[in-house]
Image (cartoon, rainbow, N blue to C red; front, side, top):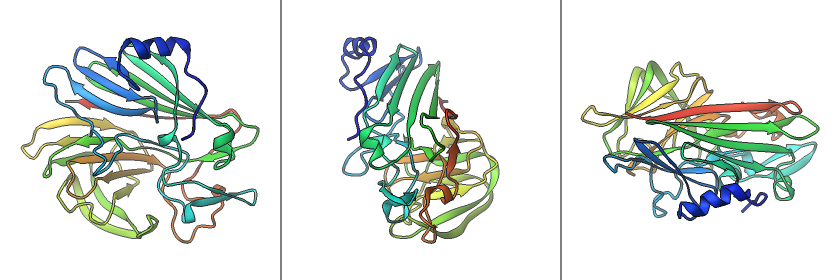
Length: 303
């Protein structure tokens, strides 16, 4: 586990006051939201009136995640490693942010902010100086999430960034995109590397979540026209809407047959078997100059 500095005293008071160990709570008249400082991970969105939970509760026998932040890579690297200045570094799938303790910057009924900064432990696996901030703002029935990456070093830095929220569904529900799409998905080999493409459907908005949809791993689409997607029940009821903007990749994933689906907007993608291994040559890698910031915003609205 990668740790950051001790949490600020004001945040600690709120932390204890709410009596929810390892949770920060946001509340509006309509919703209650919970976020874990560990990974700055969204772990609950509950409708105050109905008691309905919209976020997968992380059953470890199926998948223990809920809404991990993927940084500084998304997906898998070839041999779980990369080269920078002729030195090899090893990073696990999706990077280390999801298994790091974030500092609490602030917390109130409507907003919370968390930060992870580079340090001795991160430099062993990732040579760049950075600050990663996760901001949450609750407005009525909409939760706004903003992730900010800042280059804190004295040279350019390279990174990927992605969201991975898991929503409770029933088999037979649909994910409906905002525009008609020709859905061509990446294919993945047994190690999780991209190894080709397959046409899933043409000129459609909806994808049905079937028991075997993810038998061959995730579906990942590039260059979509859609900037949002809704989850719709098999009876036609709109459940929630996720707005993600113009991202290079949008993925759908679940354990086959499980009662959740992840909608995953990514700035980056996994390696393919023919990459050079140099991080600056990695497909779809993002680059930040000294002191430059990159902001990624998405939102979840309960319908």
